[in-house]
Length: 350
Image 1 (tube, rainbow, N blue to C red):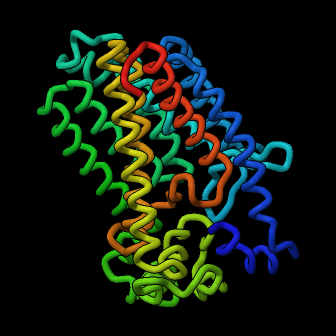
Image 2 (image 1 turned 60 degrees about the vertical axis):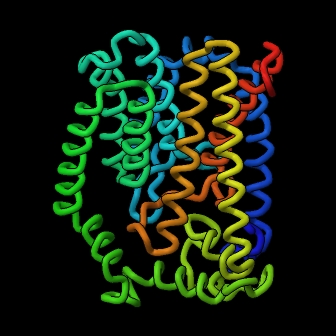
């Protein structure tokens, strides 16, 4: 799908229609190595490495804001350039937040309902990460971490009244951020009525919905979509789901959704097996967090493409073009796979 959605754009921009495909293959090879690395990382080792991972993430999030180090693309400074490749620290931050949430919750396992130990402690370094993401600005990753964090703290046993109090406060803060930022306000207004500026701010989401509409039941055929012909911006990236819908139709869309559901179910089963056979609390929680993070991001991306949520700048995990996201997601799934291998080794059900 990356090849189908990017060939014309790459040919026009670089003179090589295979440009994005070749780069994604390179990222996939690196990601395969990251998957193997993640699969060999035992939960107790990851727990010890979590403070260093979080500290490194905070350093990268600061570096990306420094002119000359951070690269600005499309009005946002979210990348660090290195050896001709761009790395996005926000992808590290998503995993760092999960690791730190459960590092603290397991550390205070008997006091998860205490406000300081069950709520404040897991957020001590996550909130600075979210603040640095907002400065970039990267509201999508910030919101994803916030939603994921709410679910993870719930799973971790934090008191419900504290969680919903925090949710209310976060809603107020998000509202203030939207109202005081013309950039975010425009996104929300475009979401409510994309046709108010059909040739400007609403163009992308309108073209996305046109592509899905044209796909009908069985699609226009692989490679035959028209929206990728400079009608739909970010066709190979944030809005690749629209190209899938246009070229493969409703059945293609449902197949992608089914694959994510299958991935989520298998991942959660692995986590439950680890908890039941090895009583490995940190591994269980981190595995659940990884599956929730990937599934939630996929759901948000698809909702944005269908016009059900304001645009967030979040990619479709494992499908969209992008090296940082692919490598980090494969590393995370490698860790979950490693939990499965450990479960088998511990004579649990595979």
